[in-house]
Length: 164
Image (tube, rainbow, N blue to C red):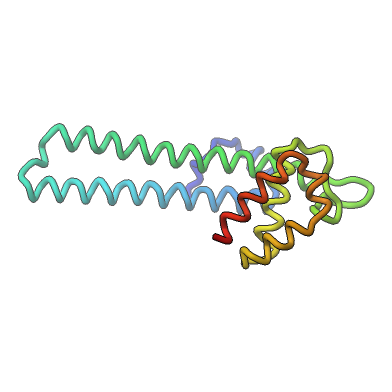
């Protein structure tokens, strides 16, 4: 698999942890799927316009440009998410005298509020696949109230959306 979702030098790739490399591969797979979907949409458009004798129209060119722009937006979102995940993983892999940072056993208070939000969200998304149980566990978590501060309600609303 060719990795072109982010540009890193060979030494930078060598310094990535196995978890970070898995993140890069997963993001590359998402990017490849977006590109394949875009190509398929452009092919469908071509065949549709060909069946209507308009394949050489400027409309096809403009529509292809629009589809390419949409695909590039999706790829940019995947790329940005990957960069944040890699950065977050680097921070999360650190630890203190109590061991590596992990929520709720050893929360990292050095993280910013949005990063704490991501830590707690990821914890609850991984802990169970049942949305109702996840929300109930979250409401009983007293550490989350103090750890998240103003983001507690935001995460509550997010988890509640999965229930409905």
